[in-house]
Image (cartoon, rainbow, N blue to C red; front, side, top):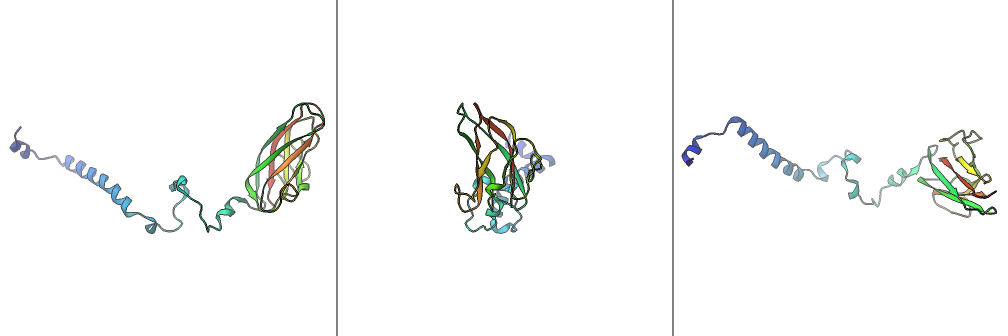
Length: 188
């Protein structure tokens, strides 16, 4: 085919539109990326969905960021616990709970209630529930242990600062003790 014959063939309208769309698509993305920056985004309009979380760093003066990790007063959270021991019959089995969100005020040691069942008992009305300022241990399995007890920030075990969890103990009453279940705490 000669150059003269190639020049005499005009591209179709569809080919012109497709070529133009391709050029806009290729150049438009690059142009948009160059035009959008932090100064062109209105404050408080970008949500977590649009943010690449792995790129975030600690914000040195974010007063509300720490509040997000603290459970508000009157709100509850739950989790699981469990502990077992060998054949020692004169000792204790122990466990600990680390709260997913810290508490601004610790649960008083006397407000850690070992239900040894699903409840209800005073301050622990049933699995997934606890009165404000209480930690309820709903033991769904237990064997050869007495009623448990725990220590929080208000004791000699941990002192000061927000509460991040509790340590728990059960006195062993026989061979092969174990205990486990769910817990619920409601911030005071």
